[in-house]
Image (cartoon, rainbow, N blue to C red; front, side):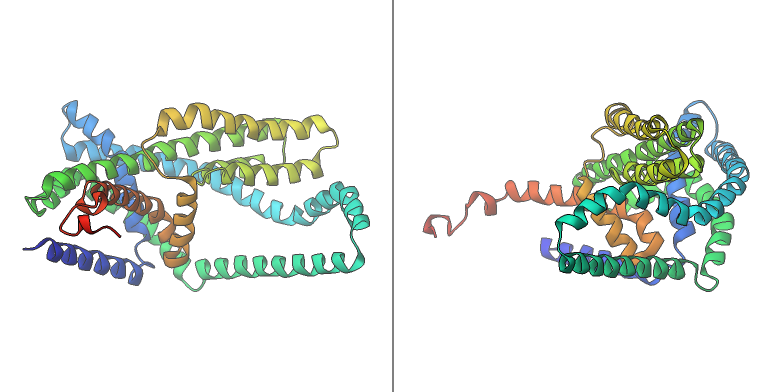
Length: 359
């Protein structure tokens, strides 16, 4: 079989898979979550196997400990976070007024330097963009929670995700072996090499970055709560858990935290402490956590990660967000392999029958 036909077959398989994911995107969430849990915990199962436990016993022990810990955390945090969310929404007008009052002198100077026409145009533009942003948020929330989709997804996550995680974790090595048996033998070494790179890249993000996010969430929540910031637990957990988006978690937490601090505190020292917590967190993340827990295994540029998250969320919703970074990692590895193959080819070197003809 020619190389072109091989390429055509793999392209068709990839296209069918993408169509399959798109059509079933509303029901794939528990399966994607279960796959992520199994992939995250597979090294622990391998370690327990080396210690003499059977794969089934190791999987059962890991699942029991993992989901028990998740349930305990949810029982402890969900009621508290629910109260903080409700109270935070109720205080939003107060925080907005405090921020507006803080920036009032600057706005007055800006207004004095601009003409009335420019200020009117600036206000109209700001109003238009604010209206569009609010409309987009409302539409997003309505799409997520419309009908019974949200209830169905919650139930499926609670019931299906543990089952998927258990069976995938128990049979992980067997599944990998079966997939390997179907690879074309002539291309198997190259495919193994690229799959190894993909595994290191995805593992660096899923396992390493997830650990970084959890550490930052605990640090921000504890630090802001110790400072005495209202809703410090909510703000800190939110900032830490979205830190997988480069700089976004820190900037979001800093903006919200300073807004609440301006409304709550009257002394600059407390406000500076809130800012210092996020600054220290960013320094620790960039110089200690990420280099040691993630390192250079991800190999994804921050802009590429942000683009992948936005594209995945637009095309497939929340399921697309979960798949975005692994898909970006796979694409990144394949693109680098294609570029390396191109640089080793006659096309790059200009060799061949027509090489001497010039341009």
